[in-house]
Image 1 (cartoon, rainbow, N blue to C red):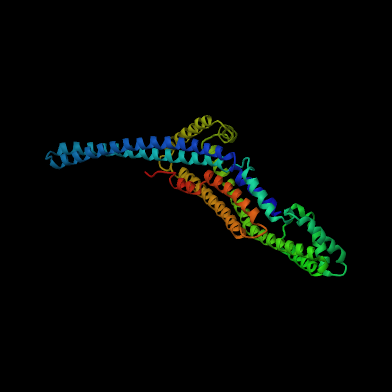
Image 2 (cartoon, rainbow, N blue to C red):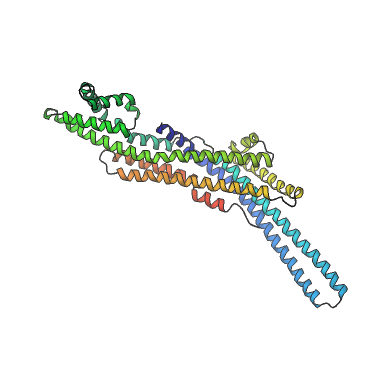
Length: 397
């Protein structure tokens, strides 16, 4: 069951590792390109606004000075009326800026949400990740080590020949039968390992001087069994975290789907099937870019329409959605941190067994595979990039 859970997690998370990495980077480029263009346009708008506000403030300062220096009541009233008009002009510019800021921020939220649709979509994994898992499995299975399978048959024969006279050996025989085909990778841990150790110890003690070669071989295989058992135990401690990470990813997927329904479908009026066809499953970067720009325009128009329909309380719903999307982005970045941390635990595991006389060669192979998996994952899903991007998603008025 643990192996199945681990394999499911690997296929879910590391689907990006080899092959998908290029697709994912391409997806980031599309989103970054559109966001960069939106930011450029917004910067120009801000520069123009700042220029107009400075002009208006200069008018107000000149007008205030004029009002201060005039002695004519009629002229003063006229200038006060003009001042009110200029203040209304300034407020109008600030209101336009508020709408512009919300247009940019909500577009940013929609684009990041859309990008996440592809980022957490499990695709085709199994190149470097499958090699890593296969190598990890080989380290944990003593039956794959030279000479072990043949020796184990000798041990099993002893168990079967003597189980009637020894309760412990009878228990060992039973548990071996229960576990089935050991060559398929039954973990040598827990109760099974404890019973096995007792049985092997009894087997070795039964060997006399005439069985010197078998006794020496059995001692070597006993040591190998204990090394593999401890390695498997340590590995299992790491693999329990994958279950929690997978649960977090599933929860994130559900929240992202909910956000997609609330924003893309309900607020923007885009059918989910159309979005999936034109963005999620679209492989042409140019077409995806064109489509996501159209979505961005729809989002901006939605903000403008809402301002007209509900001038007193037009921000709240969109503000709530923006906060929700930002939290999703942060949450995704946090999960990628957890994944890398768990991969680093494998590095600690490898270092621990590098000097083991039985495991060192396979552990060295495992380290090479782990480096491939980790580097590929980090280049595709850099946690720091996600956290930083989530903190820079929006601008303030």
